[in-house]
Amino acid sequence: MTLSLIAIVVFVAMAIEAVIAARHDRALRAGGAVEPKDDVYRLMQVAYPGAFVAMIVEGWVRGSQETTLVAGIVTFLFAKGLKYWAIATLGERWTFRVLVPPGSIRIVRGPYRLVRHPNYVAVIGELAGLALMTAAGIAGPIGTSVFLILILARIRVEERALAER
Image 1 (cartoon, rainbow, N blue to C red):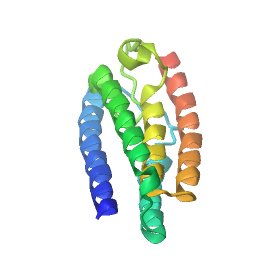
Image 2: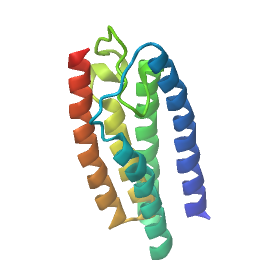
Image 3: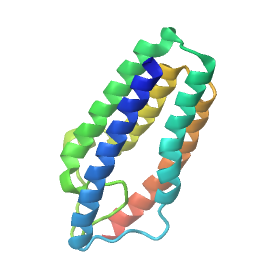
């Protein structure tokens, strides 16, 4: 039951975020934003939910591990809070893709005054939190590491796109 509830919470939140990102994507493109050709979005689009699925499957196969459940919930909720703070701060500029509208300036308020890329910190926190919740000792570190590599590549694309605008 616990893993089913965890999966529902994770994927409902992901679906809600996808709807918000799509709405922002349309608005940004209508305002003249363009997407860099070398973004790693397509890989991220598979790796992000894939890492969550792998961790949930590993948790199901290994059985319940209550010892890390609370730490995982706290980590996941903290990460979601940071992510939603970043989303609220960016407003319409937050999306899954790198889309920089003409005349953009770097955001330096909200969590962006503390951390340059709080959304990405939050995503790693989400992955780590789920790894703890599901006691995914294999899929957790692998999925989080793979996604961290994609995030680092994404940051380079994002930084370059901001500098070009």
